Length: 310
Ligand SMILES: Nc1ncnc2c1ncn2[C@@H]1O[C@H](COP(=O)(O)OP(=O)(O)O)[C@@H](O)[C@H]1O
Ligand SMILES: [Mg+2]
Image (cartoon, rainbow, N blue to C red; front, side, top):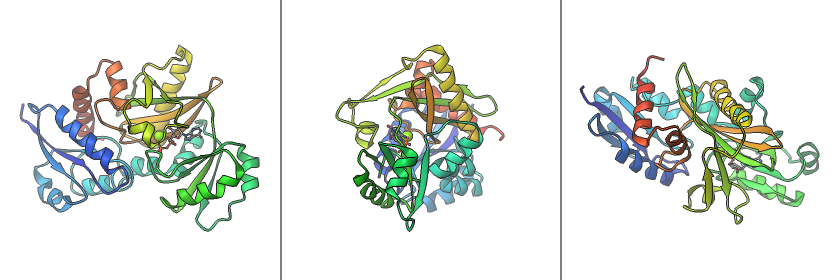
């Protein structure tokens, strides 16, 4: 079989640049060199070269997180260049990147979400109204973002204003959400027409971390990840079906990973990642491994799905 030329995109200009570069290296290592010739591009500096090379690229592997990578912009460029890529297209990527749009789509699809309010920069923040509607503690996050950047948990009303201002440093819209105390779960799905759900992972940050924040996400040993999650069959099925529903509600393609919190057998869906972390030990590759699919085979699968007629 003739080798495919794969354009591996990693780096970029978002706050998750370092994470992306690390994932990019690991994806490069894991890709089967008997099947693929790999060309590497960092969108921060190499977009003109990507455009020039377009005709000889069979598929792109986008390993970029956050704005200008996971949000549909790079996907749009690749569409214009007629280069297929793994995962979601422009629509799914941009819907999933925006936590306010995500909520609307989830709610329409009957997916349970924590209560929330959205503020734009010039809206007055009514601290009492927030507390009354959403209770306490509260979670404050930029509407567009990822890796928990700019996010805070607010346990006292006096801290809300400061937390909102911090989130505004990252986006012009901010979401204030009811805090759900419970077990954190994440569910990966893979497929185009037929979606397969991988085993659910349970995420336990250590006691020094209030939630799955940036440090807990990327510092080895800080967070325990248990796959399959220690939940019964009924809850597993429920989490997997929400992961599939969320994927479809956001018009995702190929694969995605949906974050959830379980409290008293009730599940609340937080968000869907269209380009989940892609080191060999990241959550989705771990879940695939638990389903018997090693990292190299997972990448083969994503490429195969990306090349399929949509
Ligand atoms: N409503 C919530 N209740 C409890 N914890 C939350 C809530 N929202 C977010 N978190 C915590 O913050 C982390 C990041 O939030 P998430 O919405 O997944 O955004 P992102 O991963 O894109 O930064 C979650 O994994 C969870 O630990
Ligand atoms: Mg998340």
